[in-house]
Length: 321
Image 1 (cartoon, one colour):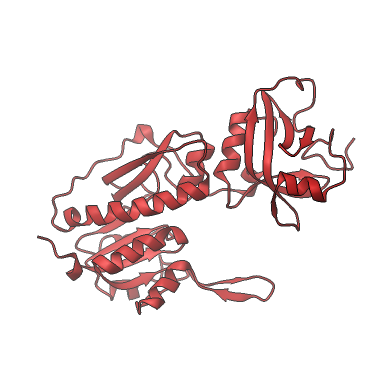
Image 2 (cartoon, one colour; image 1 turned 120 degrees about the vertical axis):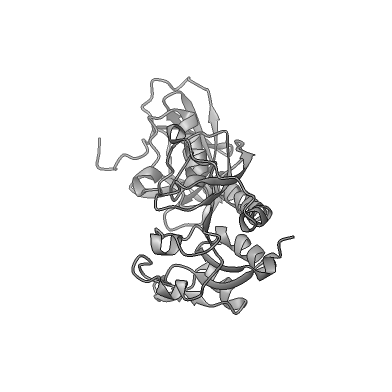
């Protein structure tokens, strides 16, 4: 029987998503090093902020490496002489010198059902692009982006109640459990390697600022998915009276009684929501955040807002006629 406690591991990861996975590796293997992105300077006070993975490593007295560019700064990682390197949401392309080093190779925990949604934002895109399901893939790494052989997968259904936050948390725990279940077969060489079907490849690239802006000329289902797929980070938004409004919770309506109004027009506002005309009905905003204010339910917005918004067209400058 495999004793994973004797397997030396270098873990590479950065965000909160990877934390449960590192926690499980600390419990079940011998983690000898952590590689994470360099510290960030944030806020007006320019405070140095550690990644969630670095905080966890320090709390467990694990050596931390933070190369600015890992393609040029990898020797310290090799010097640790790990049996296996495991990555999850690290944030840099791993050079072949690292990929070829460990005896059990380099393994990645990816938050999609590869070959679907390769790239840095697969959870966002699973919802935005209208997928009915997604999941976790444990895979061997190669020099391509998420293109290595599949070892194991587990799927989960995406519901209309899911947001990127809820799916993120669910997949993080799924990734933890599937990795620990799969590791013994990687170590003893009994796992299967499945080539990715290149005909099935899709991509989930990092979200751009342009993709966060709501286009009210799209279909209601597309807008509904976009808002859920960006809730709570980074947040979908529109412009109202030259102010940014982030949107977090919505419903959709088939009501076509406002079909002659321009898309993006606010046609109704009451305690049930802010109603905006779109191509095939209405988007009803239930929760939002105005620039410079806190996130709020629509009833709180109404109580603190005396301005008449009916007839205003979203994403139009107040200078436009």
